Length: 46
Image 1 (cartoon, one colour):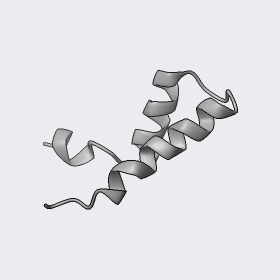
Image 2 (cartoon, rainbow, N blue to C red):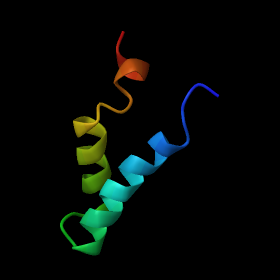
Image 3 (cartoon, helix red, strand yellow):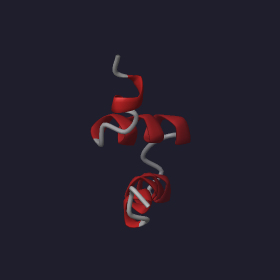
């Protein structure tokens, strides 16, 4: 397996914390997390 399972949990935990404290809406939180952790950059960088 190329990616450790633990790496999948970090973004979800960040979004869960924001949700718990009602800091952001779902999509806004996911976008913030993805941008800050640079998730998807390699897939879209061409």
